[in-house]
Length: 237
Ligand SMILES: C[S@@+](CC[C@H](N)C(=O)[O-])C[C@H]1O[C@@H](n2cnc3c(N)ncnc32)[C@H](O)[C@@H]1O
Image: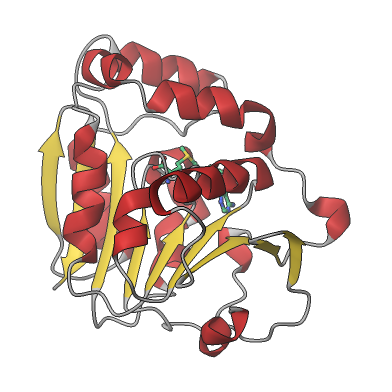
C-alpha cells in the first residue's frame, strides 16, 4: 500500500505506477536511463563470484553481509541507486520496516522486482520500488532513519556532491552507509582506469582520498573498513 510511504514524500504529485509494483516520479518522456541498455549484463557481471574475487579482490558475499549489518535496528530505510538488488534482495525482504528503493533506471528496477519475487514470492508490502533521480528526490529532507547507497560513490566526481544529496535524506537517528571502489592493485586498477576513460565511473580515487572526501562532505564520526578495492563507510548506530 503506497499510503504507508506518504510521510516521506514532499508531495505525491507526479507519482505513478508505471507497471505492477514499480512507481515513478519521472515524467514519461524522460524515463529512459543510461543503465537501461546494460542492466541485464551488468547484473550478471557484478553477481559473478570470480569477477569479484579476481578484479575487486572481494568475496561477492560481502556486499549482502554489509547491507545486513547496516540494516540492524533500522526503523525505516532509503536505498539510493538500489540497482537490481542482486546482493540485497533478501536483506531488504527480511528487514520488515518501511523501505524505499530508488533508482533512475526502470530496467534495473525490473530486475530488482524479479530478485525480490525470487526471494520473497512477491514484492514485500513494506518495500516501495521507485524510479527517481537522486539529485531530485521527492522526499522531505531528513525523513529516513537509515540511508544507504551501495556501489554508487565511485560513479560521481567530487564536484557533483553525491554524498551531500544522499546525506540530506538522513535523519541522523539510524545509520548512513555507503561503499566505494578505490584504487588497490592490478588488475582492478586497470579496470577502474578503463571504466573511467569510458565515463562509466569517475576518476579512480585512493582509499585515503575517499576517506578525506567523505569526512569533508559530511562531518560525522565515520567508521571505515577496507577490503580489496572496496571501502565501506558507516556513520551512526
Ligand atoms: C553501479 S550500480 C549500483 C547498483 C546497486 N546499488 C548495487 O550495489 O549493485 C549504479 C546504479 O545507480 C543508478 N543511478 C545512476 N545514476 C543515478 C541517479 N542520478 N539517480 C538514481 N539512480 C542512479 C543506476 O541506474 C544503477 O542502477
